[in-house]
Image (tube, rainbow, N blue to C red; front, side, top):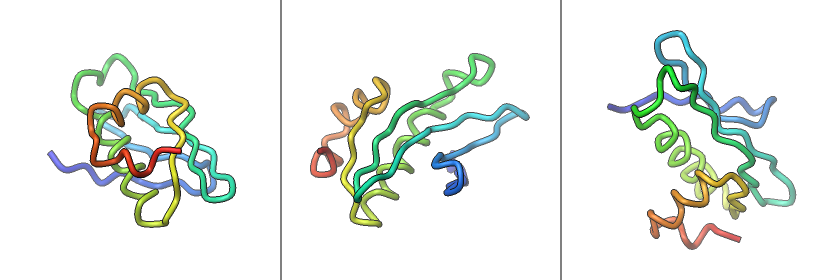
Length: 91
């Protein structure tokens, strides 16, 4: 399934709504470093790959913008360890 994840620049987060339930990946951007601070997927829509899609979208956005990534969120850190194609982004 391909999700059209929204990048909410004003709130510094990526958003996806499924079955009326909002899931988010929050970040802070400072001096070209995207610090991923939180990935939140409510239990009601858990297990559908939403967190992975949000993280992948965030990492692709970082790459497109020439940002490095600091995965402060444990989920994002684990995702980056499992997906070595993003290792070059990690700071």
